[in-house]
Length: 314
Image (cartoon, rainbow, N blue to C red; front, side, top):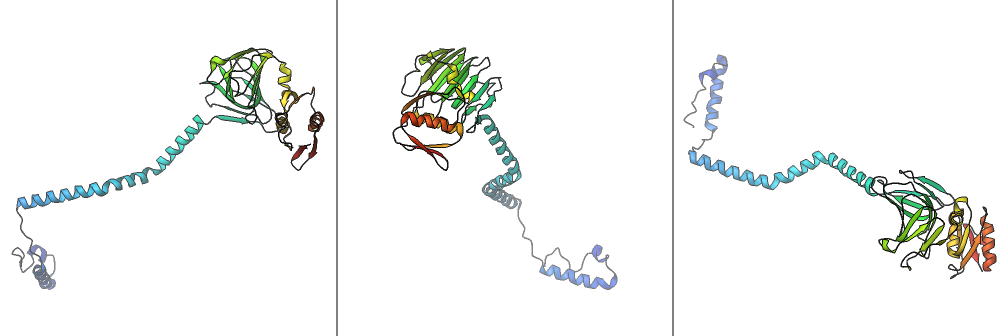
């Protein structure tokens, strides 16, 4: 028994109980003393050594587990904030880098007014793309199709990019025809007013200068656009009045124009005839059947209706 544990409970404890309970309390106290473990005695150096050892083990354990626990806890605590931040970054990137796009449905003609006051009239099936910061950085337009541009004068040049060429102006009016699905990938520029610079992209030294009543064309086989030649702007922009004017234009290109204008499918069931040239002039609006009649008469062909449009055959 521990020398510091007496057989009877101390008086200040016994006094808390009435006389009939005091013998029982003393017995409990005695038994507790018998079962008590003797506490070993340690020197001050032993205690210090043990504490240092415990501290070291706690540090090592903390290095192995606390970092991952802290990261997991941090992620759990801030997961909603992180998700919101990622969504905000994605939304901002979309707003900054994804351009505005305008597409005209087949069978329709549309007008688009830009932030600087410039106006673009777009033929059926035409697609226009431009930066969301158009007015503040540069005035560059990407074109796939045919459009008439009425450009407002401004400090920044107005540039149309299409099929590997650039059309650069300050303030003027002009028509650009440049379809990505055109077999020759040809771009034709015709000027109504002012002056236009026309050159292959990144090769400004190869430019030609077009003035009112002049036109030029370019395709990937040319080093620079063709020399400016006189052209009737009314013919180049006949589509604005729903008219057709084809001057030495390939049959495949003409049929694509008709498909876009009338929102219909035309099958050309005669291999190798797509590049055959044709000239036609219509001073007023005409039906699709009238144009097909003329084409087939000139080329010695026939056409018939199908479930989706028309088929041309020999």
